[in-house]
Length: 561
Image (tube, rainbow, N blue to C red):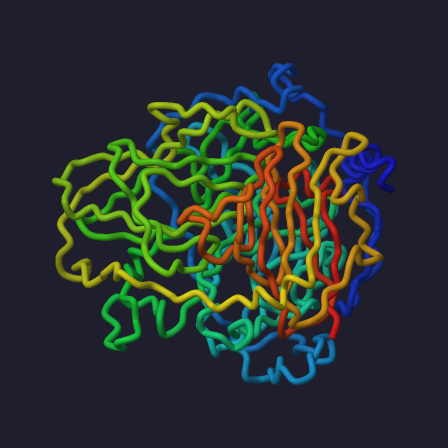
C-alpha cells in the first residue's frame, strides 16, 4: 500500500471510503456495508487557479467581510445518565497494579460523529460539515481529576457522501494519559454504524500532581485521512482541572491559583481554510508538503470578534492545522502573559510579545483588558509569513494578518467582577532522573523519502512496532529534522516530555515546561527527556503537519512491562 499511496487515496475519493485495513478491536457489530460510488472531486475546483495549489498556496477564496460575526464558544459536553447498550468492561485493558476500574464509578458521555450544517461566514453558503455532535468545533469536554469518564464515540457519518475525507474514524484524546485501547490508535477504526467506548481515567501520570494536564483537544486520527477528516470538522477542545488549576477564580482553597475562569476562560481553535468559487469548503489532499487556507477561522468562524469586559481573560490557543505555523501578537504591541504550553502550566508566568505555534501545539495566555477604555479595539494578528505548506519564510509581517478582534465594550461589574489573579508561581515541574536516562538513548530523524515522509528511513507500519519502550524507564531521545526546507511539529502519544537542549543550547523560557509537541525547523536537533509509566500497549509518534502524518511520517512504538 505504501508504494501506491496516491493511487489509494484517489480510489478512496472515488468510492467515498477507504480500504478496509487495520483491526476493528472489540467493536459492537454492525451490518455488512458496501461502499457506494461517489463522484471524484476535480483536482482543481472550478474557478480556482491551479498554480498556487502546485506550490501548496491557498486557493483564492471568495471575499468575506472581517468582523461580521461574533466568536462562537463551543458548548460544554453534558453527561448522560446511561449508555445503551451498556459498556462492556472486557473491552478495556486492565493494567495490573494501576488500580482503576472502567465500571459504574465513571461519568458517562456520548458523542455522535455526524454531519451538520455550518456557517463559516454570512458571505458564504451554509454547508455540510462533519462534526462531533454535528457541530464545528465539537463540544468542549470538561474533566476534573479523580472523576474518570467513559466517552462513547458513535459513528453516524454517511457512507454515500461526496467530497474529501472518509466516514471512518478513530478519535484521539490528544495528550491524554489513557490506556492504549482508548488512545484512538490510527488503525483501530470505527466504521459508520459502529461505536467505541473510550475510558479516560483522569489520573496524574505517575500519581504525581505536578504532572497535571490542562488544555487538551480531541480529533480524528484515522490513518491516511487525519488531515481530511479534521479539516472537515472533527476536532474539539478538552479542559482539565484539579485543586490547583481549579477553574474557579473565587476558590477559597489556598492551593488554588484563581486564574480567570468560567466565561473568562475561552478556548480558541485556529484553522485556516480555503473555499471554492461557490463558497464551499475545499481541500487538496494530494499536496504532500502541506496545505494552507487563505481564510482565518477561529472556532469555526472567519475573522470573528469578541466583546470583552475590562478585566483579565484566559485564552487557550490551539493550532488545529492542517499545516500552518502561527506567530501571534497583539496589534497594539502590548505583552501577553504565557502561563501554559501544550496544556501544561509553567512553573511561573512568562511575559511574551509573540507566541509561535505549530500544528497541535497549545498555548494558554492571560490578556488583561482592565486598563483599556471602553471602545478600544485590539486585533490578534498572525505575523508569520508562510507561502506554502512547508514552513514560514522567516519574514515577520508588520502589521500581521488580522485574525480575531477584541472589542472592550463594558466595565467588569456584578457577575463579571474580576476576582482572578496571575500568581508568581504556577505549577512546579516534576524531577527528571537524568542519570538513569543516560543509558537509554535513541535518535529519530524526520525526513523526506520517495516523495513521502519517513522516520529513520521507514514509513508507518501499523502491524509492527518500530521500537519498544520499557515501562517506567527514563530515556533521552534526540529528534532531528533531516532538513529540506520543511518544519515538523512532532507529537508523542501518552506522556509529556521535557526539552533538554535545542541545537545544543538550553531551552528558552517558553520551552522549559512539559510538552507533547515540539516544532523542529530544518536541520534542528532537539534532545528530550521522556518516561512512559502506568500503561502498556501500542502508541504512536508522528509529525502533526497532518499531510505529513497521512503520508507515512509516523511510527508505532509499544510500551512493555
